[in-house]
Image (cartoon, rainbow, N blue to C red; front, top):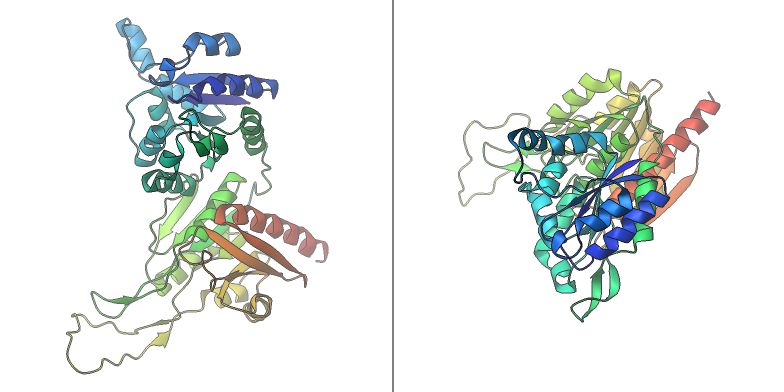
Amino acid sequence: MRVALGVGGGIAAYKAAELARALQERGAAVQVIMTAAAREFVTPLTFAALTNQKVITDLFSDRSAEEVLSSAVEHIHVAQSHDALLVAPATADLLAKFAHGLAGDFLTTTYLAFKGPVILAPAMNTNMWEHAATQANVAVLRARGHAIIEPDEGLLACGTSGPGRLAEPVRIADEVVRLLSARHDLDGETVLLTAGPTQEALDPVRYITNRSSGKMGYALAGEAARRGARVILVSGPVNVPVPPGVDVVRVRTAVEMRDAVMANLDTATIVIKSAAVADYHVREVPKQKTKKTAARWTIDLDPTPDILAEVGRNKGDRLLIGFAAETQNLATEGRRKLETKNCDMVVANLVSQEGTGFESDENEVVLVMRTGENVALPRDSKRALAGRILDQVMKLRLALHSTR
């Protein structure tokens, strides 16, 4: 296990020395990368003595031409030769640079080149942590699939008390080990997944849609890829970053989504239909914008293709997972959909309460299973629920195969 440990410039940088030791005790080889600001708090010699490795501090310095040429690609080598990139403390400045793709030193360039798991342990003043800009950056990084080890609450170096303290080094080290030892139970699987809304044109400038953000589907896609699956994500219009290792097919309408799903169905072993597909569309869209008048505008709408039902009729040995957005009677409505669409599982999610469902970062679901049981998953982040849903998918596969 090889871990690249980025150390940001904050008072908590001294705890990174303890973290390096904790990682080594868990069997990790640690390569420390220090920002210029971090060197104002702890010297590179401290980490070199602890890790028995050269500490990386600069992209360029006063070296020979040959050494400078070598250092110019060293961040690529580090990115390719390590199993995880851990940044602790991750300062507000580093979070902003990572979120916006700024790369002006060794650590930020390594981040952009790194393809494996990224773990960020923020530490800063409470007001800085709670600022809308920092929280927006954290949301972007979390949506990218990065693990965020949130800071602890307590007395801070500035004399105030609140959230902002670097999480305990032992906890951070344990989380790194857990992430790197995650099972690859989806190795060899091809997951075909839909996410987001569709947009059905009324005329060249207007359309019908819904409030789906795609966050749940994208969380499932990222989790499936991390667990070893090849993931084909058919996505409606969303503003969510594509998770690493996911192949995305972008569509706009229900007909386009149906065509993309059916084109990729033969290669899929698991189909997860989490998209909120519009139920109706205009069969023939006017070529010109409909002008506003005092008269009422009456629109005739036709049903869109029922993609889930069509896949259900052609699923073969594939596992088929459907989604049902409900405001009540989750289990009952989920069971009805499972039976009528020939699903193996339906994820019925509650969209009527504040803070869950459409557009939110959290959800609350009931998994209705072909085996007859219902599994309630209490309110949690969509990323955490994605892992639990896939856990149940694999349990369902074993249960169904044992009866066939």
